[in-house]
Length: 457
Image 1 (cartoon, rainbow, N blue to C red):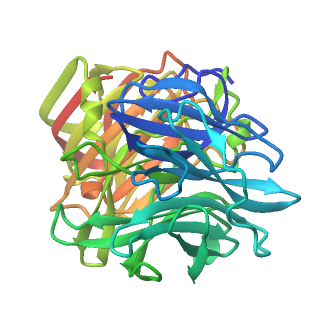
Image 2 (cartoon, rainbow, N blue to C red):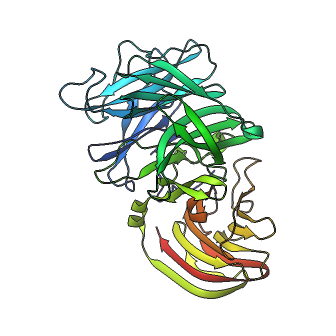
Image 3 (cartoon, rainbow, N blue to C red):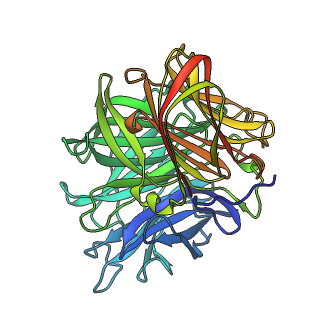
């Protein structure tokens, strides 16, 4: 498959990449480790602004205990581990597979992640007989004054605590019925998020599941007392096919209270069939997380990280235009940020088409009959797998007939944010390089484009 490298999504210079690992902010740098190559290594990149990334040499390589699977990194500010000298360092907890069993190992770095030393007494957490026992997310839980580990263990998430990152004690587990969209549980994350920009907070447990029907992320909103997590509401994190294994960054610049994360932009159903070259695999844009109060309860919100505005180039603006049929706009590009507000009028469906070319387009629209926002890539270009051509939809109520969209289009992807961030759809696409047009459309009647603001990226 031929495809141009993304303009503003992170990809490795060459080779396979999947889950983001070890997301941590330290000494002015955002660290992005990631699953890399086969057998699995930890690749490594750093950024000072979440926009420009510098890929560094491989951080962790397979050893006698096995490959380096997913995990997390922390700053040991007070040398609780005894692995550092007179200044803080980075510690990583990573899953390895030894003699057929998944175990958790510890590594440390005293030079901001450039070189790593494996702990002499690994594994620090042996496998208590689970087929799947992996992907530790570790953070310091201030109220209880100890390290907390969230771990995927078969059909549940388990919680462990430690005073020193070396000795771990089981505390509790969490189970949930995910219906027909269940599969292997992996890449859990537990984080406290602000509600409506600061009106209180709640704990959110994130979970990725992958099975025969594909890959999907779920979230659970609830309470956490340092030992047990209890869920009150649940939801789907992203209604597209290509947002997976996302985890949050630990730490942030002084004065910055945001919670940020990033996900793998792919799907295990066809991931290995996406034969781009010389790289294979990309990350999503970084996103800011929060919670919103809705009639259905608290819902996760995701918004593009504000740093992405640094990428904005030539601007395009259009206001108060009637949409009948599918007129083409004087806007073209492989990489665009689009902010739009539309009104349904008397149309049955309406929206935009991006990466429009000869018999190619990707549709972002709203269906009045079903009350759904949809992302349709069935005519988007090349298909790496038989299941790839598809239409993905999410329930969304219009605001007095208005639809507000924030869209990021790149050479190989579309990310759509709506409903003040409560509804997100992320899909890979593989159009020809010549497919650069943008259209608006209305079917079954006329709609109105109230405002469209776009930027070349």
